Length: 422
Image (cartoon, rainbow, N blue to C red; front, side, top):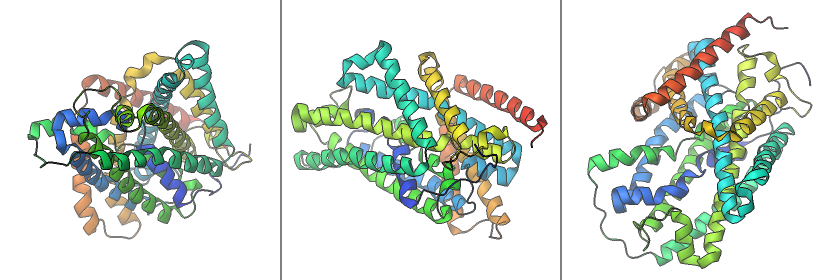
């Protein structure tokens, strides 16, 4: 290890950031969502997803502007630190990292469950433990050896997971019944299910964290954020449309897209989509590992965590932080009692969205730009209102868990501030 934190190799370009965006968004959620949305709002379901993507685009537009104002790693933590100071930035970074660490453990359990559906021996005992350790351990090693290798792997997984979904959309369009008129549902029905639709679009912000390992991040990240969300929104719309216009819509299948694929392509189609789900979750884990493991080095570079987290390996990566993240995720995954806390990741992200959006005027002013331009005045109020509304859809227990993480982070912050740095 070298002793100079923060000097990372910039091995990732626009395409690599795009892979992080797409795989941060498309995890396991969309595979269970079509039936839930169809039951709630009928044939309006695909349009609800399209509307959700358009609303989230206002948040992404704010993040795209924020990424033009810094080339350093950290994402939301960096934005809030530069706008409101070290303590506020640390809390956002710490909450985001802790939430992603927990959700990483939860997501690998989802992968294990789907893998067991293909190969039952992986569902319990030593085989299940070995799968969890192998997946998270493998991701840790690949990230330590360089982000360029991660980008290559993510590119292959992105192609392999999107191709079956696009084929399912095309076959579904060919087989779908003639669509009738779309009836607008009652507002109460839309409001009751809108948060579930919104959750499908959470995760794009992960791609903003490794800016310090990205070539020309002020150009690459805005482009990738906007293109990635647009691409994923259209895929979501297509999947929901073919499902809502299929004979099985409303019949209550536990795995709606797998059931639809079985209807269109028999056992081979069902197996292909089941394998796609496993690959999709694996790609989501890869993107999450790559982005979240870069948060502690960003905090260490600002003197908010011990310098150990920011030390650079001979491969030009923050290897200590990557290994710490991998080990923590394995420990959480092997103790499933923590799963009730997984929802904290969404709440923490929403708070990161709010704090980041509020940082935008200050950062624009610091960069010598007007505090508000036409785009900011249009997008920021909608993005802020959407994020605040979503936080009020949670419960007291989730806020209490969030408060516990804040308390732990505050303690670590003051420990780090009192520790002399070389």
